[in-house]
Image 1 (cartoon, one colour):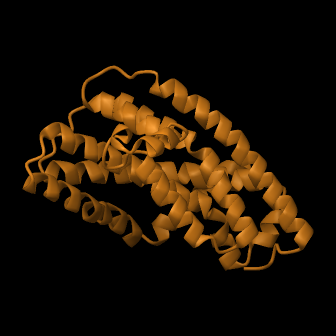
Image 2 (cartoon, one colour):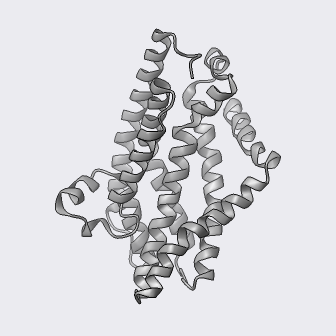
Length: 252
């Protein structure tokens, strides 16, 4: 546990050394938010639809940062040339990814606050139960752990997995219902979306914004998250063994 907290502290110290990154994280969501909301205003979308888009954008941003910071987490150590040293240390790769995940969740909470500020600036009231909404954000993040671990496994095997990572992230965002509810997707795509935890997280969050009670989406989200988490853990362990057997731990 001490190693985990030290690694989390190390991850967070980065923003102390590079505070301009925090400014970038505050400004960049506005560039993502503006096009969708301005189009909504142009075509006269009602308040419920703009709120729905806002929820999808927040959860997609969580997916994006977690997939990048955690899924590609090993690449930073590979670039710095310390990955082999980490493999020789008592700290497991899962602990390293756990530290990156916790640090990224803290960053995501900050980004969420900035995004809400942008929504208010663009006239989206976004009135909701914040404790429930933040709880759903955290549950959805946990539900996506398996995908992050699978992405990290790809990095161990391929070293440079940017293209597959971008494709996976985009597909998950579309099927998860980032800009519109997944039920409006063509039937085959909707069926596939039923296997993605993010879709249930977005649906539950939209229910909260609409003032409705959270339905069975949360139960499905937790169940799917647990299944994918185990599969991701298995994939990461297998990728680590194959990397060690191939002697490619120092390659990048």
